[in-house]
Image 1 (cartoon, one colour):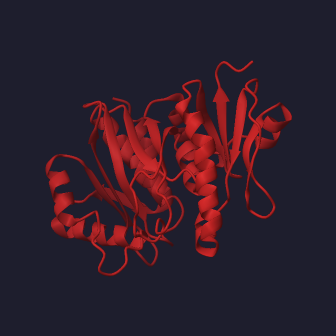
Image 2 (tube, one colour):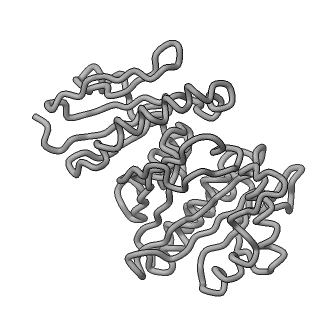
Length: 297
């Protein structure tokens, strides 16, 4: 078996100054649940979806439960991130990463260290892919998933979880895209090389160059922060979707504008991801999805 997954994971952990290790005791699992409640700003009295009893059952079934513990600085020895996943379909090939949370202020690269550890753990068990869902309107998550990890969103789910009363989701539809992380794919291998050498990782596709060579802008952000729908001619082989740099700040300052963005991105991205000829091939740090159409002329 290749040592590459663990070489990448260990390098990511060293750079982030964390040690990722299994949650072994009920006390560990209770601490992880508290951390996740803090990350998602679960209000007092609200019952969390992630409970120690559930983690105990998942652990008993051999699933993925880890904490990331700081190895330096003021939080040395403390858990600063947690992640929970369980085996999925196809059986023996896939794992679903249900939740991963990192405490604010934990330093750069902690989330990446957890995901690269997750990849190595899964590949040790003969798995070929990891899936998860994420909010496609959050640019930093899109960049992390698509560019930093090499995962690809393939489906769009409208209001996937229904109403949620946590901090990030309160008052907004919980639309999600799936992230499909093929653990030995070319895109993942390129991302792994970037994890070993962050100076070579880059900022994703060159959107200006793509526009200069005929890419069609399906959605963009105007100077006032409003969504602007463009044209997507059938002849355009490359499509661009621009989203706000920080939709979470928009939700706090202008929930109505955030909702307009939710509905507009939904209207544009749902049919694109439903089209088998169209696939996401990149996400630029400047806030743009890049999609390619296989049979465009």
